[in-house]
Figure 1 (cartoon, helix red, strand yellow):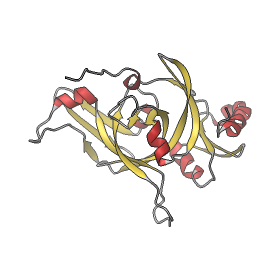
Figure 2 (cartoon, rainbow over the protein chains, first blue to last red; figure 1 turned 90 degrees about the vertical axis):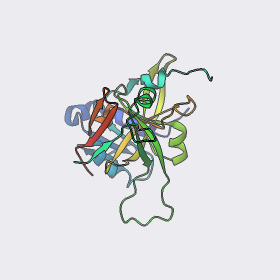
Figure 3 (tube, helix red, strand yellow; figure 1 turned 90 degrees about the horizontal axis):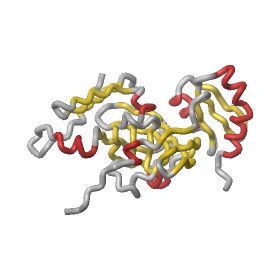
Amino acid sequence: MAHILDNDISAFEALKSQLIANHNGKFVVIHRGKLAGVYDTFDSAAKAAISLEQPYLIRQVGSAQSMPMPASVAYRPVHAAT
Amino acid sequence: MPLLDATFRDSNGQTDKAPLLQFGPSIQVVVGHYSPLGAAMATPPQTETTWALVDTGAAESCIDSALAKKLGLPVIDTMLISGSHGTHPHDVYLAHINILGLEFTQFGRFAGVHLATGQQAHGVLLGRTFLGNVMLIYDGLRGQITLSAARIL
């Protein structure tokens, strides 16, 4: 099923090697399939992105795109009602 | 530097360690859209006050999927989250969070997870991406939790 960010994620993947070479660790905004900006912090990237029409992709260059489910979500003790 | 005392207390104002053991370090946050000061908005953006778990075990911050949809938060990325049921894609939402009592407001990226349907007491998990902006003191001996924001926006 198509995702709202498919176009922007594809654009990021196409630019990935170039972004890693030049902007590793920075935060990028991709909008309408094009690089809209590079920022030092997530906060500054977000402030810039919200002036754009949705959708937009905000991603840190070189960051992992996966994580384990936090244990607090995966495992939570449930006690029987008394 | 503002300090937030997030210690659970009983009706007499005495430290109560039991809720800390049950729920973990919890703070109240206001989650919503960014609203620039002075901006004229026809419809004020929705916000919601909810409990957030300060979760040192979570790499990323997470938000209840239903809450994110209710607030209409923008989807800004996707990520894979792996658990005992395999690996699944999750939407990542952009939210503006205000930590009550800490005069600390910032943007956050939150992976959407099912907290409410899992009967979690918290609507938000504040992971290590958030903790990079604050100092947390967990005093288990006294049952006291203190947060401090090094950066005020």
